[in-house]
Length: 120
Image (cartoon, rainbow, N blue to C red; front, side, top):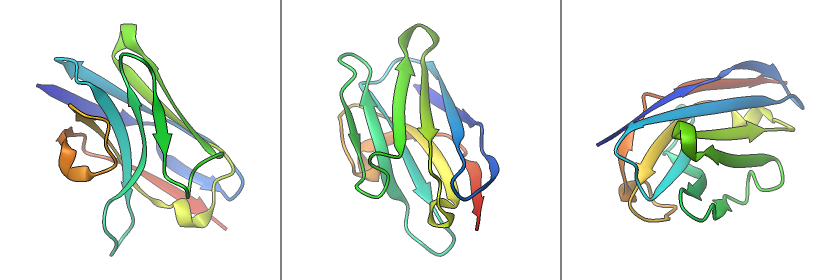
């Protein structure tokens, strides 16, 4: 069982940056993903990374602004978020999966989330 724990959220002005961290304790999964959910909206995919090969994939809305990375030795995954926009405001979740997927249903262990608020 993998238990992700997120950290690093906060309040930032538009155009600023934040770095989210996810500590994934327990048994290692195949991939880790970041999702986000804004009030009144469905949870949406942000990015995933594969533990073994390091392959990554991003949602179009964050491509070229966000970077997902990992530290295998620490069982940690990071999300560097640059050029933040007010529409990036959401609770960000880290989750583990046995497949590389953009579908939330393919992720079986979820963290509690960390709030990111971008002011205009």
